[in-house]
Amino acid sequence: MHNCFKETAEAFLSSTGLNLPVDYSVDVDKRKAIFNFVLEGNALKAIELTEEMAPNLLENDMDLHFDLLSLHFIELVRSKKFTEALDFGQKKLTSFQKVTKYIEKLEDFMALLAYEEPEKSPMFHLLSPEHRQNVAEGLNRAVLAHANLPAYSSLERVVQQATVVRQYLQQEVGKDSYPPFSLKAFLSK
View 1 (cartoon, rainbow, N blue to C red):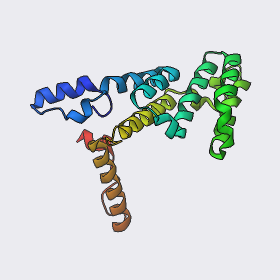
View 2 (cartoon, one colour):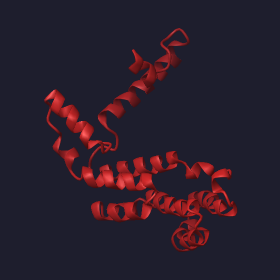
View 3 (cartoon, rainbow, N blue to C red):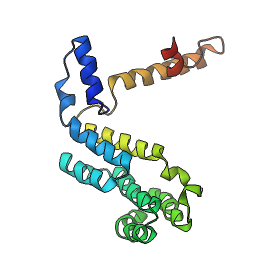
């Protein structure tokens, strides 16, 4: 439920006889729609639904708002709508140039316009599905936090904590200790 896999969670719960935590069922369908809009590259629709579901979230989280607006800019570039992308950038992204941490990112986004084939540019990673995935996951965590729910699931936190503990123990004990934690290796046992 935490990561919007409602059907999977319901199937798991029905097979184990457990009950669904009430707090996670709230707005999961809307969160999933927002998540999918970001994955599809429809950032403007994701922004619209986010503002309906979590008013003031994007106003208060400038980084997330910047990520979503820049994702729309990237999709315009990907679609070869360069004039529209430039116009959008001038109208929606220039306000971020006043903040130092956004300047380099803005330069990277605008540099995409210099290439006829942006996917072959040095900034090709901005066009990747992984970039969309990162933005979608960040948005989902922010929406959960806005609803006073944990940003990471319990399982994710346990794995993160176990990884840190194993790394610490390996440093303390030395090379004769257990190898670093690997989820893939753990699951293959």
